[in-house]
Image: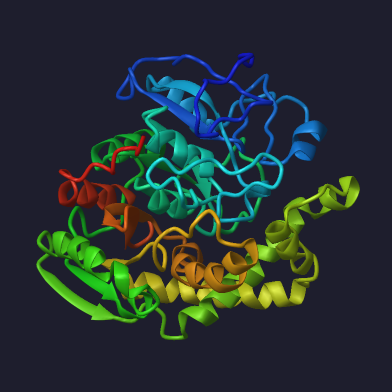
Length: 408
């Protein structure tokens, strides 16, 4: 697949300029007539993957094989329009890239677009493509989907192949996707998830559980909008309840998640970083330093704790749906200092985002409304393997809820 010379002209900064690639569909199917963008972590044969960093782009040759997820979408009839911007090495949820800048959030131009799949979310929210794919380790699809007013899907860990995707933290990495409506989100899921059987009971869920500890961490100004989304879901299920998601505490769960993630990131990228000595923006650089110091013994202990949490989550969730805020509040303003985002906001957000990673669980974020002109995202979480049932519930509950139109 030879790269095209010129990325689409657009004012949002969503597409990569140095390593643009586009390709027509290779088959016909359920996605015929639709276009998509892909995060700059997916290999496309004949083109170089940049991983959000110019040094990575310069030190890696063109890919020999196209990523399996991309191949599936092309075979289903979708046209690839271009690569989309990623945060540096995927190690951020803000959308700011020290080297390439920050894409403009079409749903709230004065606010962050979210990352690390920033360009993919922006391209969809701006209507530049019909849908886009990204990756989600610690929230890199869910956060930009919430910030840009989109539907976003993080599937069960391992359900979508990571073949041909830049390495990051394998225990938590997933391929995710964005759409402006729930029906298309489900249609993409049929293509990417395949026909693997889902665990019983099928197809429905018995109850909706509001995660009280997660809601306790969200800002008061978004609660009414989130409650409206919860009410929509509750109408589809026979019972509703409320309970904390983490008996250990979400802050402790985040500590465990971070230890495993940081260790694996350094295992994946440390050799290249030490060899090439690339420069990093402040936030990414601050996280990579400690990641290099996480020892194998500490990481192994954290992995064992994560295994325990995963088992507990599987038993606790069973045939329920869990509701929680996708992020603690509105997307931060673009003018917010990086240090404030890192120190005051990131930890709060990651406490809400880490349960899906620790449990390997599917999670959908839904654009349930807006406050002060900025989107608000509500997440629904299900037992591992119940991806299609989760997508079906979202399609039923939010069928009349397209994402907010781009503010021109």
